[in-house]
Image (tube, rainbow, N blue to C red; front, side, top):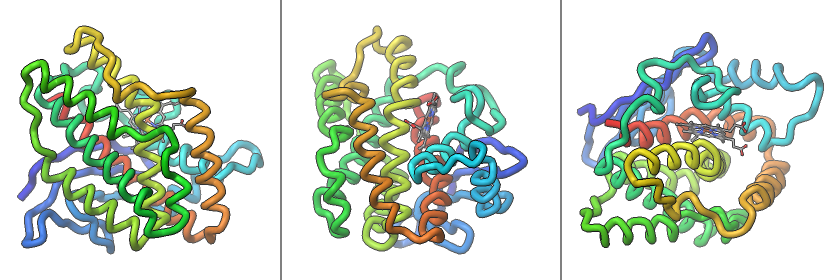
Length: 272
Ligand code: HEM
């Protein structure tokens, strides 16, 4: 049963479509190439590996990129031009900037975001894989901020919804990756926190102008200097990745499409 769908555009290199999946006894589950990715299907219409390789080949004239720079470059290519200057995707359909946000849908987005960020925090706090402990209390955490925002919306008389089925499935997927596939887990970890600090903030500002009388939510505020918090996390990620094989690094980069797809799907729903 299709529950939701979003197409992220296409380029000569790669195009992705995201769709929520059919139900089975264990919840939502669909296939992702040879792998099973619950809740979301990412169909890549050309070779992911060649994209990663071609991307590496396009690196700045011989400059050696840190691993986080590679992660960033992989993510930037999945943006559309209207999202970010470095984006390479063709925009299909109206730009999010041209669409009107819906308050009820935005509340659902905040609830879903809280679930996802809380899941990341739980994973690093539990630290089933020892190096996750390095990522506790980075200052990028978002669940407490979202808790405050949702409390505020509740006080304004809004009903706070339950997390959506797709995001509950995504949270389980993150839990599963964190135990079995740390490279893929770190890809989601990086993309979720760094996207929030960049496009997430921009989108939040636009939404606040349109439907919240410019109220700045806690979700878009950080204690301390954000650029420093981000830089500390970049350093830690580079350090963890320094022990990975090239294959493990490629595997991490290849997960970017899935990470991007889940987040775009969550964002798009604000505008429907
Ligand atoms: C409405 C959707 C989005 C918009 C408007 C947007 C916009 C942007 C912009 C303007 C930047 C900064 C580029 C620069 O440094 O010059 C950026 C960076 C980035 N975005 Fe997005 N983005 C969106 C969605 C996403 C999604 C869904 C993901 C992945 C889940 C993502 C991941 C990233 C990452 C990893 C960076 C790099 C951040 C850094 O290096 O500090 N973005 N985005």
